[in-house]
Image 1 (cartoon, rainbow, N blue to C red):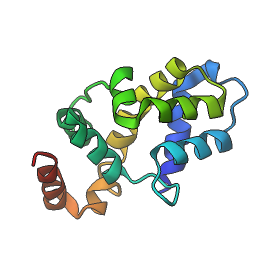
Image 2 (cartoon, rainbow, N blue to C red):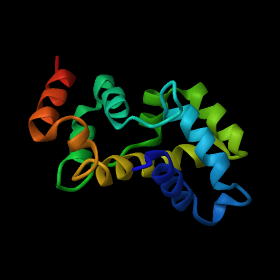
Image 3 (cartoon, one colour):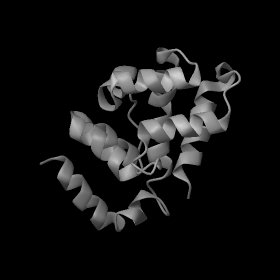
Length: 140
């Protein structure tokens, strides 16, 4: 599963008609820089750790569970990803920071939620027991 492609498609859908002339290659490159590791690929475990380590563990848990997802605010996006990083991301796409931050705040919970079940994060961390081990690290 190519999480960067999934994230790109979700981000573009959250922008809707305001995406203008932005193409998927631009978004993919920008998201790879913002959310990706050294290889430019998105690692959901690292992304969840970033939010959980920043005091937002309950949000991350809601995205991983089967219930309703808690919303992620623009301020929380800026705090967890870094305001200068989000500014650079939005500038690379020719978007206003508020517009890019808002789309990210809608996209990230959905990305984690839809990829945390079968075939996604659960398998990557070793099933439910592995997820429990990963979650326990958030609360240390």
